[in-house]
Structures are given as structure tokens and as C-alpha cells.
Image 1 (tube, rainbow, N blue to C red):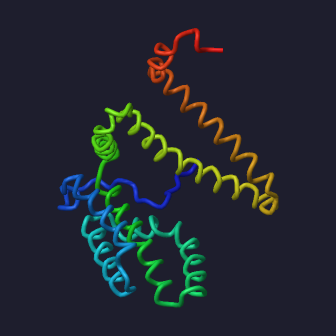
Image 2: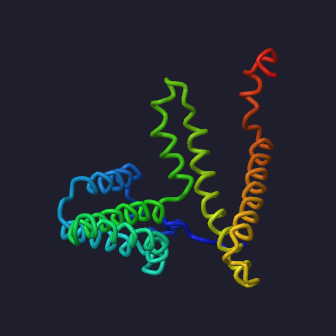
Image 3: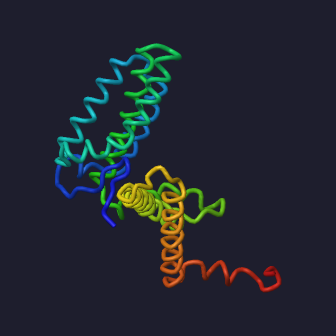
Length: 216
């Protein structure tokens, strides 16, 4: 199965100042962009922020092609959102909303393109550590994020491969020819992931903590 990107850019090794920036600062950048989507009232300010972030992305050495590939999947959705908001609110508010969404996508892409996956997961586990007192398991939370990051591109790739195969057979308008193979492939992937986790002993602690009297 060929590889497929999904919204966010993959890690690109490098030694740029963006790569060397502390992880907490990159997290704050993403958080600030998310807050800006509610606070920025003008499309010009949103466009300026987007231009600045695109410049930071290119300065990191990740490349224009990767930036386009990270943004391209969301463009059809943004087109629909933009047209609807233009119909409801007018051109300027619609442009502001679309630009703010792109701002968040590019900010998240900067994070993922300049941070190794393991460092990113370690950061997520550190952020979740204060919730340990409420029964949360930071390591399992980070593992869940890792599985999600691996699963989403796999499922997107499975759908694209099945769609191309169905189109070659003239069945691209047949929902069953599209949905059923993707469903089977996804279930098989989930079973393989579960077997891999079980082989590493994950979940055994839960079974030991569960008395036999509670089962069945």
C-alpha cells in the first residue's frame, strides 16, 4: 500500500532554529494559533499570521512541497466552509474563518515537521502526567496518540487504494465496492495492532487487577 499524508506534515530531520526550539514553545505556538482563531477579527490579520507561519515552515527547511501536501487534503473542506460562510456572513468573515483554520493546520504542521515522533509523544505524556492523580496513565495516553497517528494515514491510504481499484473496474460509484474492502482492511489492521500490543504485554496489568469473580 502506498503512503499517504493526512493533513499534517511528517517529521523532516534538520538542525534549524525551529528544530532546536523547545517542545513547550512549539506547543504554545499551536495553542496560540487555536486561540487566535477566536480572537482575530479581521481577515488581513489572519492572512498576515498565515504568511508568517508559512515563512517559519519554509525557514525550517521542510520545503514548499511538503507544506502544500500538508494543506492540500483540507482544501476541499475549506472551500465548502468558505462558500457557506460567504453566503451566511459575507466575504470578509468567510475569508477570516478559512484563513484561521489554515493558520492552525500550518502551526500543527510546523510542530510535527520539526519534532521527532518519540519526542512529541514524550511531551504528550509529560503534559498528561499531572492527571495521574485522577487515575490517568500518561504512557498509555501517549501510546493512544501514537496509534492514532499511525492509523489515520493507513486508513486514508486504504480508502485511496480501494477507490483507485474500484475506478479501474468501473465501480467507483458503487458504495459497497468502496466501503466493504476498506472496512475489512481496517478491521485486519486493528487486529494486527491489538496482537502486537498483547505480544508486548500491554493489557496484562488490567487482567491481573480484574478478579475472576468480576468476569462473566
